[in-house]
Image (cartoon, rainbow, N blue to C red; front, side):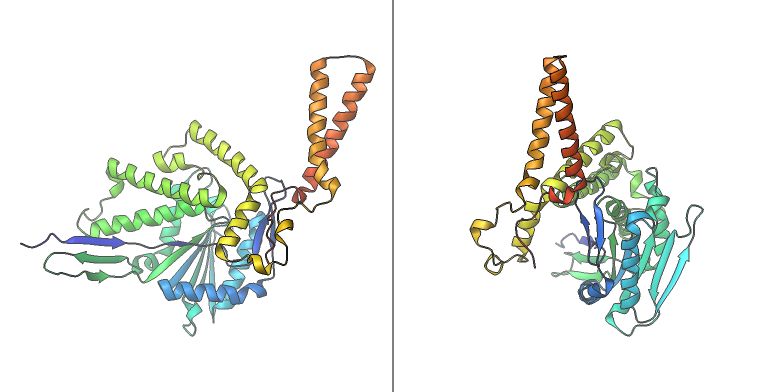
Length: 375
C-alpha cells in the first residue's frame, strides 16, 4: 500500500539592520539621539556580511523602509552609499509619487564581476505611503518587486508516495532582506505581506486553491494567519525592546481599536522606561553571551565592575529631586499659609525644577549604562 504523498513547502525571509556603524543613543528624550560613524569604516564589514548572506541565500533584495526625511535620512543615505560602493557598476532609478519626490529608489547591479553584484537595493517610502494605518498600500512594494519576487520561487519537496526519500521539486533562489530602523513594526508589516503573497502562490501551485482564489477569503484560515504573524511580531519585539509589538490589534483583527491604542500607549511608555533605564544590564548580558566582552581581558578587577564611578554630585541629583518633590507635597498637604512655609515651598519647588532640568539636559549621565566596557 502506497503512503500518502506529503507536500513540504517553505519560504525564507531575513531581517537585518542597516549595515553601517550607527546607534540610537539613549539620553532620556523620547526619541533617542542618532549617531553614525564614517561609512568607509563600515565597508569591509558590510562586504563580509553580504558575502555570507549571498552564500547562504543567493541574491539579496534589500528592502529599506526608513524615512527619507528627518533623523532617519542619514541612515538611509549611509545604506545607499554602502550599496553603491559594494556594487561594481551600480545603476539607480527613482520613482516619485503625489506625496514625495521619492516613493521608490532602486540601485541595481549592471555587471556580475564580484559576489556583491548580487545585491539589489529597493527603498520604499513606507512612512508617507502607509500613513494613517493604510498598510494595504505596502502592496505597492510587492508590485515594484514584480518579476524578482516571482522568480525567486520557494522551496518545495515531496515525501512519501512511491518514493522512500524526499524529492526536491523546487528551491528558493534569492531572499528579501527587510529593515526599518529597529526592524520591528514596519518590517513586520512588510514581511507579513510577503508571506501572505507567497503562501497564496504555494496553495495555488499545490492545487489547494483555484487560480485567482485568495486564502484570505477563508475566515478561519485568515484568523490563523493573522494571529501567527502577530505572535511572531510580539516575540521579536520582546527580545529587542522588552515589550510586545505595536498595532497588533490591526494585525490580528484588521481593525484599529481603542483597546489596541491604549495597549500601544502602555507599550510605548514601557519601552521608554526600559530603553533608558534597563538596557544597560541587558546589553551586558548580550555582550557576555556573544563573547564580545571577555572578563579576563577587561583590565578591571571584579570588585570595580559594578561600582558607580560617576562624581558624587551627579549621583546625588536624582535624590535631591526626590526629596524636593516629597517636601513640596508635604507642604501642600500641611496647607500652612504662613510666609515661612510659602518660602519653604518655593525654595524646594525651585530646587526640584532645577534638578529635573539638570537630569533631562544631561540625560546620558542618567540612563542605564553598561557596566562591562567593550573595546
